[in-house]
Image (cartoon, rainbow, N blue to C red; front, side):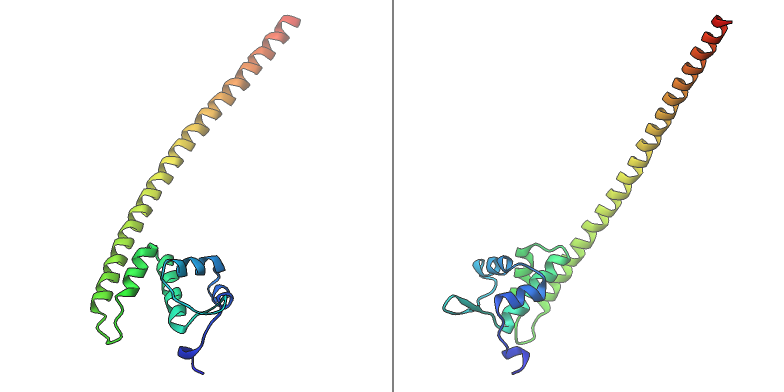
Length: 147
């Protein structure tokens, strides 16, 4: 039996993709995969497995579940996948721009944290220096009065 004819159990797919069986049942509840049933047992096809793989890939690159499913559903077996590829390329470009902006924002936040930390450390050193000076002055005054 080749891979396109193979069937999978929910636990096999959960293990393969490192997700919970609940995740796969959720995909089923939403209609993203449609396993056959043998009593209570779910029997997933190679196509179901491929959809789960693609949904999880979309998740890894930051697509929403709805975006992933929308793109997957555009697939045509006749090879006319131009629309699907265009939509995916657009989503990738949008995601990349958003991540680049987040990267700039994080860099700015880290710089601001460095600045505030530096100011706090300077203020703390100034307080410690002042406390040390006050103690030295108090100690010197006590010695003079004792003499």
